[in-house]
Amino acid sequence: AQKITQTQPGMFVQEKEAVTLDCTYDTSDQSYGLFWYKQPSSGEMIFLIYQGSYDEQNATEGRYSLNFQKARKSANLVISASQLGDSAMYFCAMREGLGGYNKLIFGAGTRLAVHP
Amino acid sequence: GAVVSQHPSWVICKSGTSVKIECRSLDFQATTMFWYRQFPKQSLMLMATSNEGSKATYEQGVEKDKFLINHASLTLSTLTVTSAHPEDSSFYICSARIGYGQETQYFGPGTRLLVL
Image (cartoon, rainbow over all chains, first blue to last red; front, side, top):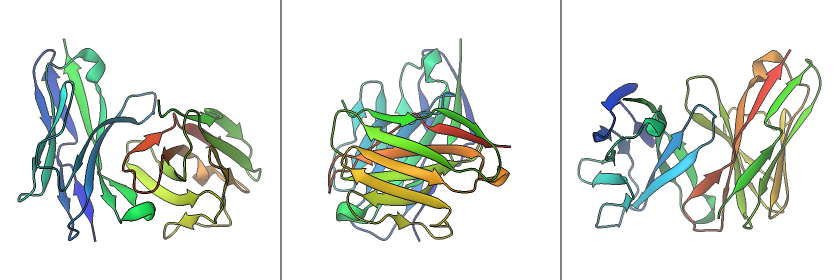
């Protein structure tokens, strides 16, 4: 069975500092995808970043980067220069399955609080 | 781009009634849509996957007759909660994927259902 583990229920960070949100995964598939989504209190799920298992370079999207360590099966999200608006739940997810019938498995989430 | 809408955003209904939730992809055609359920302070749990023009694939433990899913077109999927009961109260969120083989799911804003 595949699973996603986020061991940090909550994290605090000072505004303008960087923060790392941990995510480890378990899969026997060779091809898989890893995602991070942000969920503000409004409930919407906002796509942040994607890393494919065959991608050799870490994915980056603006202030977000994914620290992908394949051998350790970790896909940590790094948010640089935190902003107050970054306060939200963050979910790590993994694509399970191939082709048109793949689906996402989500971790339990990490609540990030950014302090001024 | 890749905007997904849901309607209604909030619904309160009496026990025993049926509730229909719509999920629309506004600026792209979604070959596959997904329906999730999220309880307070918990992660998203996939309920079913629907492909346009075919029957939905339900996850284990999800009652097909309770949660009717119709993916009538490439831009619209509906979830009907039949004979709703208080335990069906939850946050229901849909997502859409642009095409087969595409990785990223784009989420709607969610629908909060309260059954009295």
